[in-house]
Image 1 (cartoon, rainbow, N blue to C red):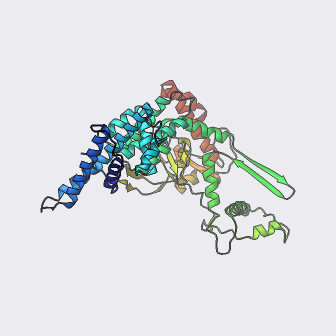
Image 2 (tube, rainbow, N blue to C red):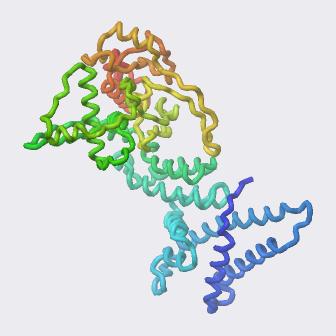
Image 3 (cartoon, rainbow, N blue to C red):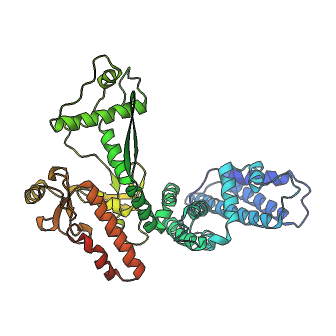
Amino acid sequence: MKSWGFSHKAAAIAYIWYMAIEQHPGIPAGSPAEEIRKGLAGVLRGVERAVGAEVAPGHREALAQAMAALAGGQDALDLAAARLAARMRETGALAGSDHSTVIGLLRDCGRSLAQARAVAEVGDHLEEHAESVRAAEDGEIPFSALAQIVTACGKAVEKRPAEEYPDADGFRAGAEAIMLQAARDGVAESGLKRIGRTLVERVSPKTHEERHRRSYEERRARFLRNAFGFTLDVQGDIASEHIVASALDCHLAPPSEGDERTMEERRFDALVQLCENRLIAEGVAVPVPEEGSDAATALAAPRPCSCGGGGAERPLVNLTVPLAALQGREGAEPAVSDRDRVLPGSVAGAFAADSLLRRVVTDPVRGVVDIGRARRTFPARIREALAAKAGTCQWEGGCSVPARWCQGDHRTEWWEGGTTSVGNAQLLCGRHNREKHMLRLKAHYRAHRGGDRGDSDDDDGSLSQAA
């Protein structure tokens, strides 16, 4: 049996609707409006009886039953209002009235702006979401979930990759299926909103990968000098964004008392601090500006470091990655970073290659159920063995990045059954690790289009040494 949530405003809303109709004494006898008015009056009488009645010992469940009936009725009223709104739009019923929109009419009758918009939005798209509407009619999902489905799917259709999905209805059907299943599972409204924001990536992960790859291919850092300084123009992909932002965060701390620098100034100083630390680590002399100059003053400004001062830890990037996303399953929920950014599968795979992994078991309603212990994918002894075997990045095309700057990488990914051993490991620099996963995903989608995963062997041939 469906368990309904209750809004304490339900009785008040019913009363407002009742009073709004009472303000129009000219309602024709026997009309639908009069029938609705009488029905609402009956609802209020039932609530008054439940509130004022003596509760006999052993019969307190009557109040809970009344509450459940009222709460469930609120969803039915909202859906009925949406159907009425659709009919009003179809017939032009507002023409010549005091209201130009259904939202305005509902607002004048006491509904909040959010409630009015939800009713109008559902009313505008009843036919496009017939399955979700039936689920609401049958009590499988509440009206608020139906409104979330309609709104999220509408936004996703507007952002869909038109070249892959020229048919909006086909894309909408895929998006609706994801949202409806989550609503049936009892996912809360906040959870539905999060799912709604990732519908394009869920329905079309291939396009998400292609857009990320274009951002990577168009990466640049342009250094422009002028008479008094320089401008650094940087753009790149989302994986690089997380690495750069996390590294800068290690050199940023809440401003101390008296620190009047803006966030832009603090971020610039953190970048200079990061470069200074690299030069010092490599034993390169740090250029010292002329004493008393503006540059000297800027470099002398406090630049607190929040990384503990060790300088040996890698930039921290926290991801929540469903196992299905790592395995490349169709329609899998995408990875999301702690910066609330949706990451393509290749980025998630690259970050997971050499990281601290923590198993988190979740339930759509209860949330986190269990958190497993963290483990480092490649322990120090394996990294040392790899460094002894190859002093630089092992990318098959050649790469001179020293081993100490590289990441441990599974040739056969651990989520595909690969072991964490020297025989299944190699060292790849961050750039080639990310390129490897982009090429793997590209081959995966090419094979999927051909309908035969075996075809991907030729596509991965170029990765024989770094796969």
